[in-house]
Length: 100
Image 1 (cartoon, one colour):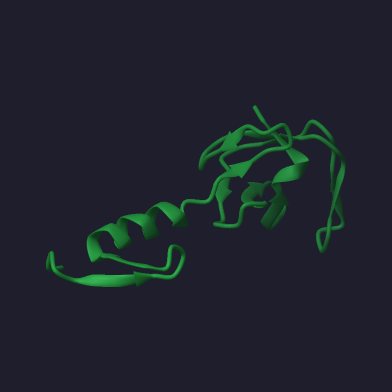
Image 2 (tube, one colour; image 1 turned 45 degrees about the horizontal axis):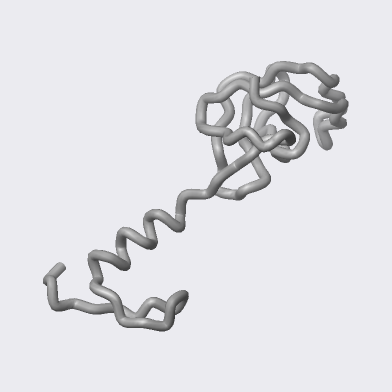
């Protein structure tokens, strides 16, 4: 990009340099995911369930205290993607887990 390129930033209502707009867009894409007590979650963290959860479609209940290893963030502030034996495509709400 050239230094003299400007783009309109709808959030601020001003014309800003294109390089600055790209940096701001990258920063706004980072979603903070927090567990039930406010700890910041990241990819690869281990979490523990804080209540019994019935898994739809699997006919199984995950008990309170179950350890879930190696979570992945989905881009949604309230959902985390994880693996658990016997359950494919498990997505949990962040409000039901606590970082270990």
